[in-house]
Image 1 (cartoon, one colour):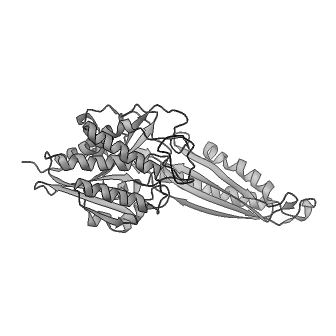
Image 2: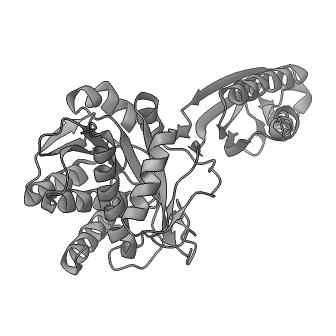
Image 3: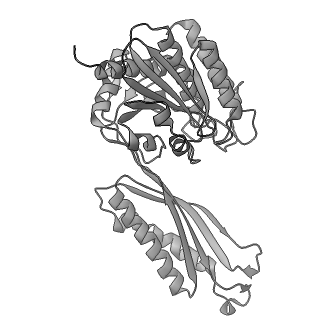
Length: 385
């Protein structure tokens, strides 16, 4: 990548960082992407699955195709940094690097539009609402794979702590199946000075919170992976009243459906039995996503593309218990999701941290890999002569 394009992409990325939007609200971000694609001379279709944009480049006579995907949304986090391009939207920031992913895909569109050394069709999928708002499912429901055919699909995510510009290609699972739960215990309200006249859901919830920690340690095979974490506890409005109900919300993560089913069964059983112990009722609500799992041929293409782009490639990193809705694309198509190193973690700059920032120095590597994997895939798809 030449210096001018790198500087242009850096400016674009910082503009996106300064103007973040939450999932399903990416109106300005989508318009920005459309404007830049227009400047690049790359045709596109907007409004796919909400604010999604799909750009299409065709070259040569090959009928083969490949998809490249980037996410566009931000998070409901108040930015704590003092960057000159810090978020200008209260309580919203690009704390996961989607500004960098979007820019990297625009960079790949720029590089491939200038490159005559490939043949086929590349679909550039700019996806909204990755952060738990159903963006991938919305695009799929809107027929993205039928309207913009692709034989394989690839995507990347920046990874703080991994050497800047290094590509990590996992064998099989990359990220876990994300899940959420809400448990409500309903007792009998009353005066806190007369607890014997009540059924106290706060005390019962304290027992439940402790008991839920036994699911992973006592119900999941130690050779498998699972997480159960409680993120919210809500109950009571007055210091001298025992409330009617208390609820908790949390997340669970698994890689294997059988482990997920065992975890959910224990979640419900423990909640109901603890409620019964304290003479009250429990309501359990759960939802879960899909694990992000690469397909073997596409892993090899991804690694080969990294080497062809002159990047360091690692195959030894463990999967993460974070989640990613690119998994829904991988349910429908062969593909690979890779990590690209964001460099050392500085000033609390982990993903979803209020001081996180995408490393602009890796934009040439990110756009370079996306360009390389598209070309590598199309060559691999080419019929034998």
